Image (cartoon, rainbow, N blue to C red):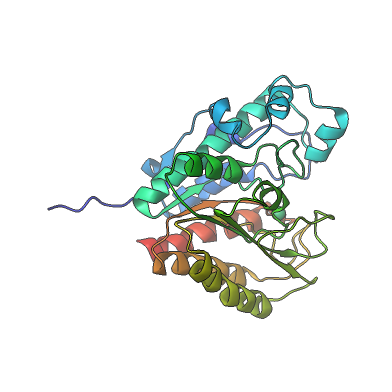
Length: 306
Ligand SMILES: [Zn+2]
């Protein structure tokens, strides 16, 4: 019998790349540069990509309120709500968000089949049920998680959020859901100012280095898996933990960041857990550094899963 070869699937759509006003702090070009570099460096092939469609609103409604969704779609959010999100609101931006969210959901099914999948976007962990914030409009992981749980595709979901910012949206959305475990390691002085309570929060002091960071990760991740026994993992692989990041306040090196990714992937593999990776943030001054750091996550995954 010929074994079906496993292939990592990567969500990417041209619509992930949007024109933002000049000097906008969000490095949206990375969504164009990352797939280009992955292809150029021969990490993946063109047929690893798929282009997601816009998600059905009935799926979004399992997580976000109808009122928020309607006002969002009709471009009726208030000035304050838009300011909190941080993007100039437009139809294209909303469409982009709906496509990214479907990308994360599609990725889950690919991960269940092929062990791992990536969305070249996503990890919009600051979005709440009724509001967006911090460059996040819809919470892609929450939307995918609620859909998978409701339809019994999975029973217990672990969200490993290693972006430098706390996963406040997921913490709040799932605070009373015992089938979801939210784990967040983040800069204690980073946005958001008011943190929510995750199942496990590890706040890190300014300038936290590789050694402390990796020790804490290795101490806690296997313990969570052994106690909670998830059957699916989301991994937010933000690279804003890097030293020199414009927003991040901790000081992990590029090598440390790769060791972080390696540890998460090796652990997922060891426990035979499918993992969907979403990108999260990265705000180094040099866009090439951001792109390199994100591409390293794919390279590390390839070295483990192939
Ligand atoms: Zn972040």
